[in-house]
Amino acid sequence: MSARRMSARITTLSALVIGGGLLLAGPASAHVTISPGEGHAGDYVVGTVAVPHGCDGSATTKVAIKIPEELLAVTPTINPSWNVEKKFVKLPKPVTNAYGEEVTERVDQVVYTAKKPLPDGFRDAFELSFQVPDVAGTTIYFPTVQTCEKGQTAWVEIAAEGAEEPEHPAPAYQVLPAVGAEGAAKVSSAETEPTATVTSDDGSPALAITALVAGVLGLGLGGIALARSRRRA
Image 1 (cartoon, one colour):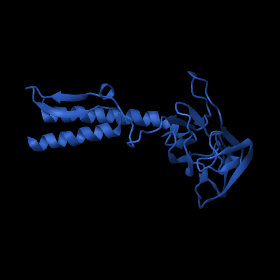
Image 2 (cartoon, rainbow, N blue to C red):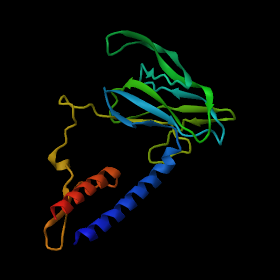
Image 3 (tube, one colour):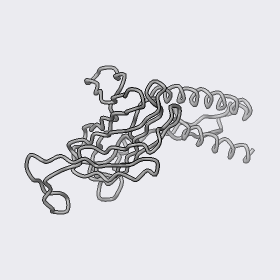
Image 4 (cartoon, one colour):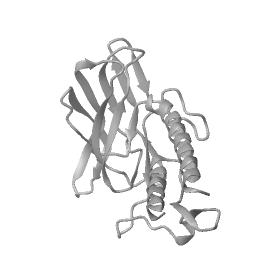
């Protein structure tokens, strides 16, 4: 296969993958979400709750984020366009935190109130710093109520296992197993993805793509490898 024909195929594949990715990303981006949507148990992370639009065209005035019961403490980042407040709730009985301190209450909600309403068609993001709880293999939720000048939208629905995503899903965060002492998850050789190699008509290697995936990163690696092949020619 000539380099020109291979380039045409890769260009077509890139367009299909990128186009498909945009189609997949479209509906999800309409929801209130937290990103990244996963983290390792015990890690200290910053999750970003994003509000992408108003309520049926109405400007957003308040965003109230319910904190999962598994979290004792959350530190919200100050957003200059919003006033922020932490609301606490008493614990049924005192517990000891990671620093050996007795804790009698936890953060129940973080509420951002707009200094000036956020117009529909514009987005904003709210950062929360917290330690991922030691509940690996589970998903915790950050139900969020978005109040607007007219009406509100409650992003609080949690789908049953195997059911379709609800209309207004609560932002979800998946808890992964804790990372090993070496600072990286261990993957056995049996779990490692194989390397796929595309060869030319005469059997010589023309392009190597490691673990080809339907994503921009995989396409970027393929483009780099193709450029190197052309320079060798």
